[in-house]
Structures are given as structure tokens and as C-alpha cells.
Image 1: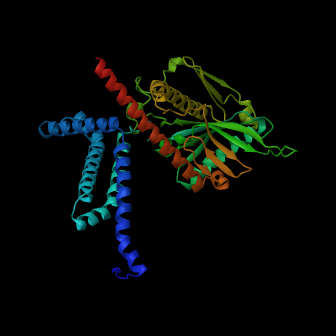
Image 2: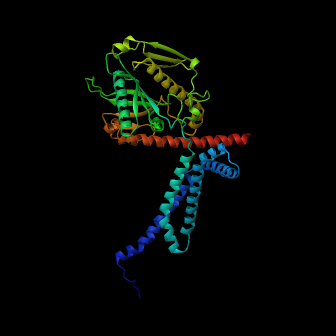
Image 3: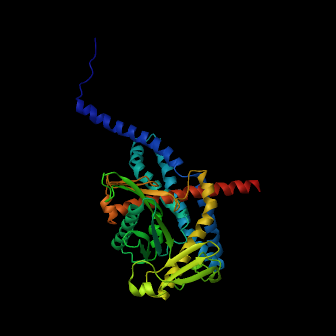
Length: 423
């Protein structure tokens, strides 16, 4: 005689199955997440962080009995990394405890652990991000004001018009973000309004750190006003971001003071040839008939700076020296980075310099594409107006630059380890 099973409604079956299904899904997610957690941060990076944390602990112990100003300064520099690695270790320890609880035979404990999987994983991600950030050395010019030097490239008049568009874009961006600006130099073609060279001084401290992501070649694709057949032309303009320094070389510059021969900003006056001449182009009779223009030539490097915007030779000379120091400082910094670039290329990391194409502005598609971060924005008008869309693009590039720095740190650490083993 056959025995029939008790009848249970379909909705009850679903209610019974739901917790099992949820637990299975959580366990699958836990397994995949566990792998990603263990592989998401380089062992070389962790090794570097632990080494710095160990140095921090040693210095703290030393300072407890014998105060030393240099040691105290170093302790402060290492404190962020020491806290970050401690937070990371605590988050990983919590994760390991969760893994044990998920294997427990106690169903209630397992369910409690399942509820903690997502927030604990998020804590690990946050701790990893903070740890990576703490290891990236602060750029030596990040706290300084800056100069944006904009020049037209290939494309003739259209390139010169685009250079003017970029200048207005940066002026608008700075105005909306509370950054003080001054036009340091503005050269136009004789008899026209096409920009030959423009230098925008962003006077607010920290401007270099905000805007250094803009350095490189900016390309524009659009139909010029003079194009009768409606064909799209490609033109370009270059943007050079230079650190600026107060006229007296003071302020919070530290080793960057141009009065110190060891600093990046130091330029020996004996190496500079100074010339005065009449200004060219528009400017009125006074400017054109007096020798107010100043040209400085740094003979060891061949760097030439000419300023003729002002009516006063003294003011033009001050501007020329400021611009020359900034160019020399940037050049020295780039020279020191070349060896690191060589090492990082082998690991897929690098530095985007002034000669690299960094961004394309496509008028026909109303699209802006950054070739470093890979971001595509369809808000061309807002970008050219210096709006939130531009900040979004710039923020993505800053993130990309930070990732490159992290990859570079890994390469450097591995190289140091190899050298230590061979010695």
C-alpha cells in the first residue's frame, strides 16, 4: 500500500527554501570574496608597510626616553602608515574569524556571521585603500601654487583658438572652486586674437596638487568656423603645469627655497643672460616705444623666458624670474623621475609627461575622453565651463595617478629586495 506524503502549499515550500538559498548564495559570495581579499594587495606593498610600521615603533620607544627633533619629525611622517597597517590587520583578523564561524555547526552562529560578511569586506577594502594612500609619498610641489602654461600645437589657427578655450576653462574652474588666478602672460598673434602662449598663475596654495593632472597634450576634434565643407579637423594644445614660488622664496617651502643651492628652485644668476627690448604686438604706444620687455636665458639648459605684458620693466623682470625658476624646478624633478619611469615601464606603470596625448574633446559627439583614466564624459559644455563634469574627469585622473604611484612603489620595493639579496 502506497503512503502519500503530506501536502504542503507552494508558498510554504518557497518560504522554507529561501533561508537555505540565501545561505548558499552567501557562502558562494564569501568564497569568491575571500580570494579577492587575499589577492587585492601586493605582498611587496604589505612588506614595505610593515617595515615602516616597525621603524615607527622603534622611534616611539626611543623618543620615550630621549627626545630628538629629527626623530620626532620622522615619527610623524610614519604615523599614518602605522595606523593604516594596524587597521588593515584588525580588519583581516575579523575576516578570518568570520571564515571560522561560517564553517561552524552552530546554525545561529553561521547566520550571524553571514550578516557580517558584507560590512567586514567593506572594512577591508577601506583599510586597503587607506594603506595604499599612506604609502604614496606626498609630491614635493603639491602644497604650492602653480602656473598653467598653455600653447597651441598642431592645427594652425584652430589650435590657437582651442588654446584660448582651455585658458577660459581653467579660469572658470578656478573661480568656481575658490582658487585665485592672475594672467601672468598672454601673447596673441599680431593683428588677431589667436593665442600664441598663455600663462595662468593659480595663487592659492595647493593648486599644484589639484591641477598637475592636467599636464600633457589636449586634442580637439571639431569643425572650424572657417571650414566651408563642414569637415572635422583635429588640432591640439599643450598644457604644462609648473610649481610656483613666492617672490621672496619663503613660505612653507622647506627644501624648495630658491635661496638654497641644493634646492630645485635655485638658479644661479651667473648662469642667466638678461636682455631688455621693446615689446611686440598689441599694447599701446607706451609699451611698444619703451624697453619694457624682458628675456631671460638659462644658458646651461637653454631655457628661454620672455615677458612683455606689463608696462613696467621691473614687473616684467619679476614675472620672468618666477617663470624661469618654475620651469627649472619642474625640469629637475622630471630628470629625477626618469630612472623610476624606466623601472616602472617593466611593470606597466609610467608617468605621463608634457609630450603625451592625455585628453580628447570631440565637439560632434559632445564627448570628452581622458586617455589615462579611461573616463568618457558626455558633458562637454559643462567641462568647457569648468563645471562639476570637469572635476569628475580630473578626479578620475588623480585616482589613476595614485594607482600608478602604488604600482611604482611595488616595483621599487621589489628592486630594493633584489639588490639586498645580491649584496
